[in-house]
Length: 102
Image (tube, rainbow, N blue to C red; front, side, top):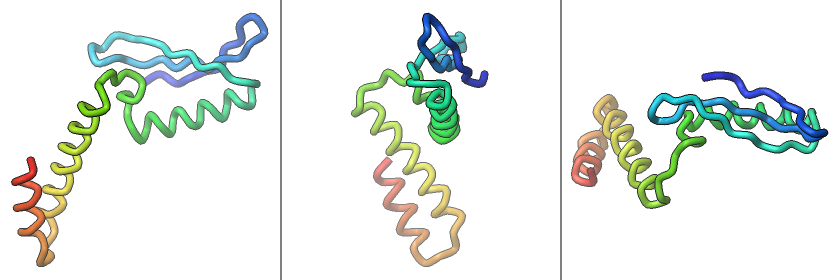
């Protein structure tokens, strides 16, 4: 993904965030900043957010319920994988609970 950068227009400061949407098309999001130093902090925050959530945080248009269902399904897959790899006494319990929930 392309890196966000600072743009000044008409005396105002913005952070421009280029990204690819779900269809692979380049889009951009503009976010207003109070100053150049504020814009630098926004860039750091946005990069952290993008690293944590991926590009989906900029393009996701699901309803809250759809987003939560997707998140829960991913969490269940993660827990199932973790339970299958662990050799603890609860691994079969977690596998059965997660498999029945999905």
